[in-house]
Amino acid sequence: MNEKPTITFLGGVGSATGANFLLKFPESPRPLSILVDCGMFQGDRYATEENQKPFAFDPAAIDFLFITHAHADHIGRVPKLIKDGFRGPIYSTPETKIISEIMFDDMATILEREAADRGVTPLYSRSETAQALRQWDVIPYHNSFSLPNGVTVTPKDAGHILGSAYFEFARNGQKLVFSGDLGNTPSPLVKDTEPLVGAKYLLVESVYGDRNHEDREHRVEKLRNVVLDSIKRNGVLIIPAFSLERSQVILYELNNLVEEGKIPSIPVFLDSPLAIKLTAVYKRLKHDFKPSVQQEIASGDDIFKFPRLQFTQTSQQSHHIDFVQNPKIIIAGGGMSTGGRVIGHEKNYLPDARNTILLVGYQAVGTLGRALFEGSKTVSINGEEVPVRAHIDMINGYSSHKDSDHLVEFIAGSRETLKQVFTVMGEPKSSLFLAQRIRDELEIEAIYPEQGSTYTLDF
Ligand SMILES: [Zn+2]
Image 1: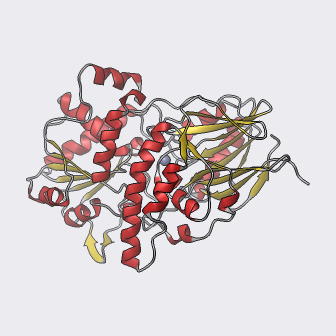
Image 2: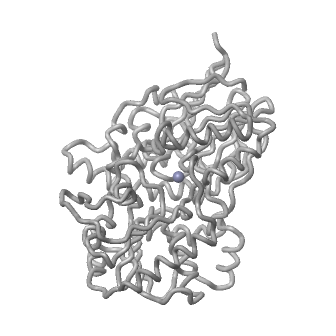
Image 3: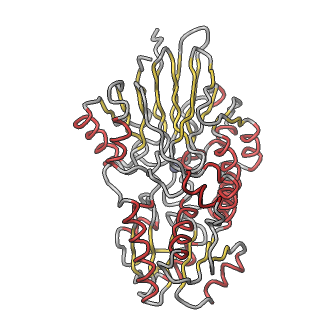
């Protein structure tokens, strides 16, 4: 019998969503099964049909679930795991648990709506999200936690969003690391990604495995120019933004540009109830920000507040935005235009050449955001053909993911000890490109695993 541990790639391979990895220690006295992340597959809809499929393992046989961070593509199927029989403990950083509670509430609402529209039963209900939170415990960064079979686990700061961790599983002085998503360090708000030290095996995200971003200075300058151009055309600037992290980053950058007098003060709307809730959490968890931002806050600056910024909570307030004179800026979810209030704004404002859509994040295949990014001249919104005359701009630099060069730099931190790297959480060309770079530039074995494949680890 093979007594060596194995890793199985169940989701988050060949696609940037659906993170789900199974680590098994089969040896006696008893086998140990650990799941890392249990995310939603996302595409043209918030939750694609793939999420309905049964898990490829028995959820009741899983001992522990570790969650790297609170994005839907990492936590979105946790309640389904509960529904299908998982009764073990869930672990994440304390921040991730706080944010997940808010994300679950939003997910349950969207899933109920999508299911009603399609005449199917929702993927899960609020009783399962509540149960997930009851099974959920926390481990702060750098606290080591002992598991059976001589395994310890330690969360380190991934620098991706507030609370994001990469997990180091250690045994016999060797380390296996799950990267989760890795931040685009230096991020405007959150702390830098901690260096990878002494890893033998690494699962590394590769959303931007084949591309590089603008640096910090250039992205701020580009944002400023997009705002100024939009004002010049007396247009509406729509920024579809993920409610978690991206909306707060954009607010923070606009806050700085307004306060430094680099853009004139015009009406800015944060038009997303979820982003408004999460912004309040970000304010509360300010001690997790990078030191320079903590200093700004300590010196009296409310970093998410500037003149003419309005948080539009109710749908009535949201509709009222239409009557506000141009120029104006609307930050609204969802970030890939698969739902949320941004859809209504896009329907209204896409046909007018004075207006601008500024994409500030990854746009998955099949989404409205991807169609805009690829230059579609008409798009279908809620069954209606909408001509695209608005300017479409993109700033990759606001991505909260490391780009190709920085992924290689992160991996190089363990160049002397790494035996194998698995490139996951990216579209195939991106994951394959990164794997090739790791082989060529770092001379480390790099594998792009297939969905459902299992590898034996010498660990
Ligand atoms: Zn993420």
